[in-house]
Image (tube, rainbow, N blue to C red; front, top):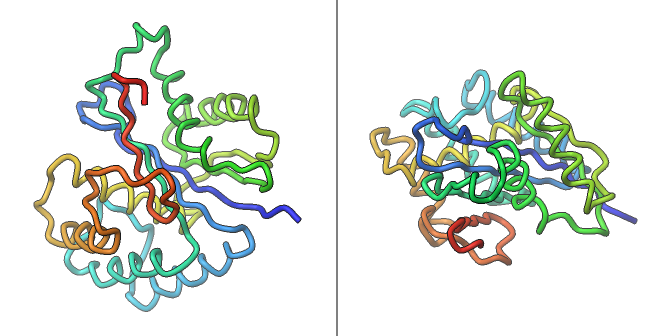
Length: 226
């Protein structure tokens, strides 16, 4: 019997000319039958720590660190998997590749997902809504993926407050972006990064092995095509 997985995707500093050096696309995946359990557990942790609202990397502070410390432990103690691809935007050359940034965006999402979609399983893919163009992007990406995959049951955009795992994707991705940009002003954020790196055994500025499942980082080299 085929297993079904839910994939919760998010993106950071992905706009072409936003003045930020890196474009990051990422996701957290979970077996569908464990989704309710994860949502329940995370919501209980929020209540225990008197945490209100969404988890967001941008809002981590000293008072919230105990909660985020426990959330990181939770992620690494169960079946949840994280993957991110990182693009150095100084290497972008859309004209030379006969594309615009929207086409490039679809290609990068394909790179994020294609090696992790297996024919024996089914997938529901959810993307965080960013703006009024998100619906068009989701529709375009669905067509792009369906050329090669027939086992994507659903691909749609959702609001991050609807999904605890979407929020957790934002936190892990935010840690990567913060480290890559050399930002170290918030002690609580530095502590979260140090904890992730300690568990992973390597800095967030290095790619992981292709076979890494739990916390997979892939830095795309646009100049050399890999």
